[in-house]
Amino acid sequence: MIDLRSDTVTKPSEKMRKAMYEAEVGDDVYGEDPTVNKLEEIAAEILGKEAALFVTSGTQGNQIAGLVHCKPGEEVILEAQSHIFLYEAAAMSAFAGVQTKTLAGDRGAMKPSDVEAALREDDVHEPETGLICLENTHNKAGGAVIPLENMEAIYQIAKRHGIPVHLDGARLFNASVASGIPVKKFAEQTDTVQICLSKGLGAPAGSIIAGSSAFISKARKWRKRLGGGLRQVGVLAAPGIIALQENAGRLQEDHESAKRLAEGLQNIKGITLESEVETNIIIINIAHSNKTTAAFLSELKENGVLAGEFGPHLIRFVTNNSVTETDIDQVLLVIQKILHFQPIS
Image (tube, rainbow, N blue to C red; front, top):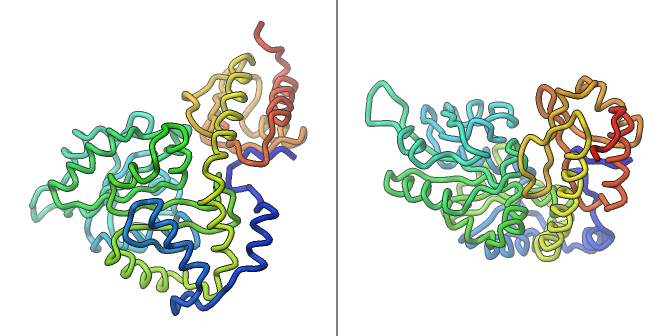
């Protein structure tokens, strides 16, 4: 089965499995797991932050950011199609007691002028703005890289108004590889940043949240409250170290696979690309084909290909380290077959 549903489907390498088996462990809730401590030190250095914390998932990392930065009754500004708003089960409202204010972006990038206009005034009728959240790469925008200049402009606005900025950087390393800009430069335009180890970087589980030492001290308590104290978790931190130190560079292979798939899809009648492919996500629209979304996905599966529904008539493909050039060519043949179309000559 060729699995293009997400880059979360990656399996740990043999080197990762060996590192898990051999990992030196201790009780991380007591701060005594040496492998976790090493992972956190490495992550903080790469991201240019004072400290880092290993958390169970990207969603948990994002929610900890909201819980530490905000007070109940405040408002969080984020892009209207962001992962935090669409796909984290309204957790910021449920846990942090905040409301969200969404702004429409251009390929996931909010206009700095819109962000500044959205900041709340000192008015008894209005909530205070407690946090601004960014996302890079932007999932719903098809893996778009948010330009560094856009992040810089928003961060400067936030600093002038004394408002923290959090980055959902689940695929930040993809943004770095695609742009040639170090992850540290992106992270400099934030107060806190979350990165996923379990997507394109290939670790089996876990994410990192990084920020100031004071922030991480508070984050550690919120992680405990959320049930994220996992004791001898060095067995999961060990592959995370390999993910950070060795796997970022190979993300270019995923990007090349995505572009190869996108070029082929453009030559099949009935399919249109929803957006430019910059990283490892391809979103297609099949509204002009002879298939419903459900039928398209079902027939893909019957022919050995998995993809994901991403909205009415929208299908998402995500390349990852298990997908080869041969796989991409096979996917294109399958799609031509099930749509009953020949490639455009």
